[in-house]
Image (cartoon, rainbow, N blue to C red; front, side):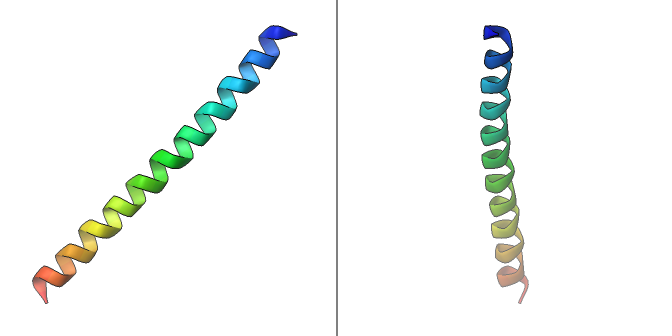
Length: 41
């Protein structure tokens, strides 16, 4: 039982970390494109 619980805890942790990683990555790319757009116009 403890092995399965441990697995679920790790899965949840990686899910949150993955979500935050892709959220921040997306915001960084948006900032880059926004900056390039301002620079070129």
